[in-house]
Image (cartoon, rainbow, N blue to C red; front, side, top):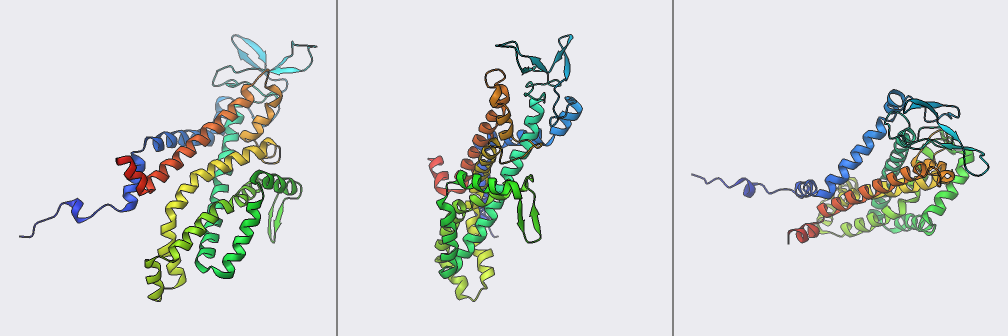
Length: 338
């Protein structure tokens, strides 16, 4: 009678399953994922909060609005009592979830409602810009690394030119130029106030930072035995690229995703803070910080709240990126086992 081997001996776990099990058991990935999902849910349900709970429009000014608080009607914009008594001071945080939870800005708009709407745009632009960067970088890295020669030299020189510019300087320059005229490429036209504009700008300026490592990895894989064997067997270039090379660079691409989302989100916030990113009446965390600049001494929560959210989200994305990197790196798993 043939002896049946244990399941572990019959079929060993694949590298993907080992990496997934390592990632699931990593506390950093759990903490980061829970926080990011929580922020995403809040941002998705921003309209529900604004219209059904706070009963406010976070995009229109409410200079004469009042709220019923502590048994009396309180103006959202109070007459200033300092100095000459000129101007108004927005109402501070009420800590009432349905009535200006984080107070008002200098136009009488609900800061918490704007924070949720701003999170939608910041996270959406950061995610889509990062995906655009990843897709373009994979294409350039595969083409340049696999075919080499003139194609590699040509694409590498283009990447070098973009690399020569500081990221924020290039982003600001492109935003200033395209903010007035928009972007037109053949039949495709992107308006100056469209959210697609910062997505395209941010997605393009970070391409060299991802494409160059991918190109280097493809160059190394091009000389590996299994690729040479595929070439010797007469496999098509498309087959070699998609079946032999692309699966082997996929782990590196996964590591780049959360890190690029964090960088893209920070870049978008910087551009919006300078008023050359998300344009009114839309909001982002960067625009809300800009709105709170003049209120730092009277209502600092207007600027601090979105800044705090940017920091927490960026930290969570970096923690998730580190967890993914360690899960996909056999050496890191070995160090953790020792």
